[in-house]
Image (cartoon, rainbow, N blue to C red; front, side, top):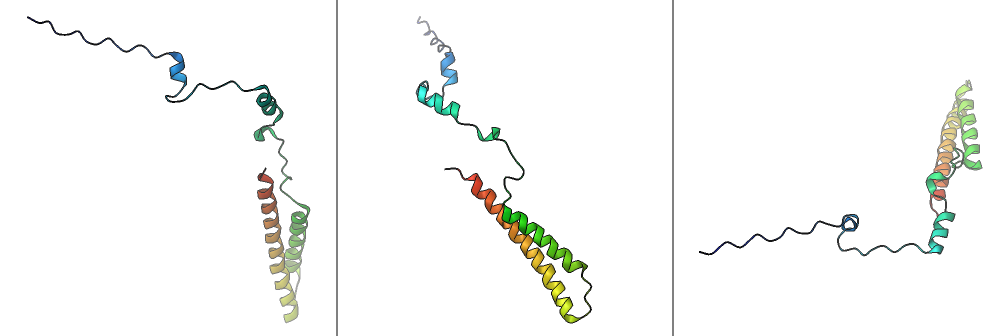
Length: 117
């Protein structure tokens, strides 16, 4: 009578380094002194001081003020003739246009400041 073959031995337990490194990757090399100095000298973007006025330009501020003045002037004027009504409409429409252009100026500056070479 033949005895059955014993079961194969269990696989060895995984090592600690095998759990940390994904399969098929090489061991990472330590950074050089130059790389360490470059990393230490660079400041992370999240730690840069943020100013709420960094996205504004002088042109945008002038546009907001001028547009608001035009809109207020157009809305507060009491026109009695057709020419005064036309001037009032042009003032209000021009004021809103200047405000929109100031917003475009501000948005363009904000987008261009995010691009770092």
